[in-house]
Length: 175
Image (cartoon, rainbow, N blue to C red; front, top):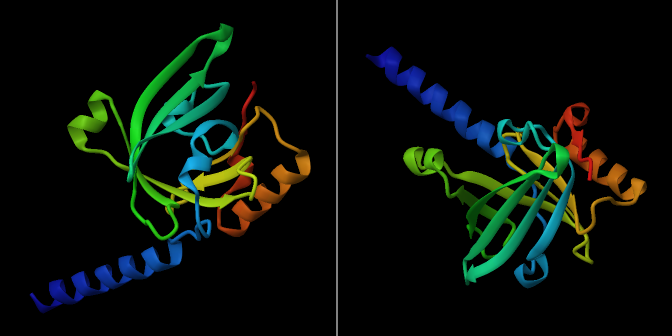
């Protein structure tokens, strides 16, 4: 019994340490009124739900003081699109850079799936942003336009690499 308790304590301590190490930095402060609107995913880590997307967009709106509406669009071959609606709840009001996202579909309602959405970096003009999850399994570098300056993209990709993301897995959108 003592061995089980000791093992559980070691496992818990390891998880707690991993959480501290894995935590992503956030943008200092995000002005939600400037953040809302349409964003184009210029490059991203592949996700199961985006595997057939040639390009992705995200449109954000204000629902209330702590909730943002989300409309994600997947651009497919032959001009076809699919969309999914959701919402993002602000979890850190000091920065507005840490949110929890849920989508309105059967799977997420059934299993109560919530996604971590961290605004890691955003430029002062709100034209380019990097959002990701602490587990390093999701990342999007987005722009207000379908493409961004190569040097700006290079800077964002280099920062993602510093944070432990594998840029060799990034997929560039084809708008």
